[in-house]
Image 1 (tube, one colour):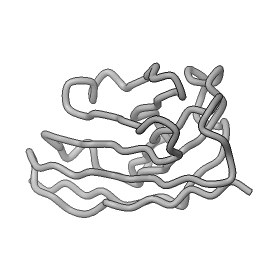
Image 2 (cartoon, one colour):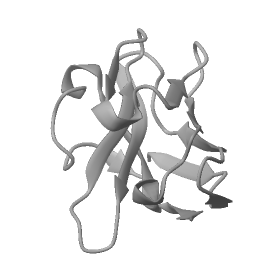
Image 3 (cartoon, helix red, strand yellow):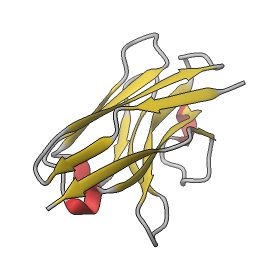
Length: 122
């Protein structure tokens, strides 16, 4: 059974940094993409960043210059280094795993973690 355990959330001031981690189990590294979606209050869940098993990425344009997603080879752990955080980055962040060929699919695909809170104060 797929399990995804997130860690690293918290509260920072504008311009600060956080690193999210998601440790997965119950699936193989090959053929599966991992990454993050987020949901702010009153808004729909939206893509943050995904990375496939061969290193291809799908990232939200507003985070491309600030966030860095990585996944060590052969491991089912994905990291999201978030820099220059803004209040609009705040919300619940959900780890996601899906097939590589679903890299550019919508939000309602694959398996999900419980979610972790990210707060950004002015």
